[in-house]
Length: 144
Image (cartoon, rainbow, N blue to C red; front, side, top):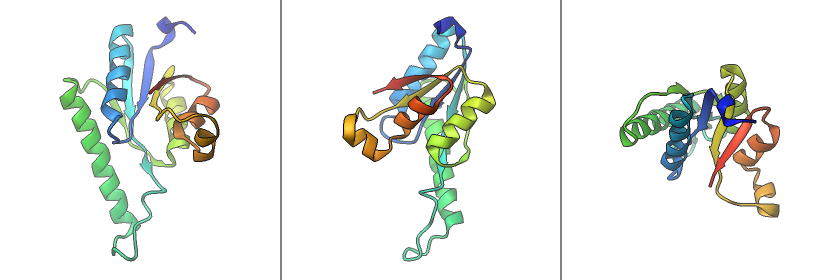
């Protein structure tokens, strides 16, 4: 697929220490190609369970995760000097939601970070990036 076909670039972020680098690569590519850019931060259902011991309800846990997503979006916008992107914040399981958003928004390319794990370790860990790479109908760019 030619890069000139990339008109919509979906960039998956997660609030990790690598999020800024992933967003920077994806947004730079979008600017270079004159493409529309969007960030997706999935509110992970697996993390939004709450804790009986800590007296945190699932609803409270989800609120905290949504605040983390907003903070990630704001940090990216202020650090990279641009808020020129669409923001998606679905709730679900990241590997599934990233693909759903890519399809619904009709992205041509998904930019996602990887921790560089491969082989048996990567397979056993069920990496979100690996899942997206193998199940996406869209082109995928991995940022190490």
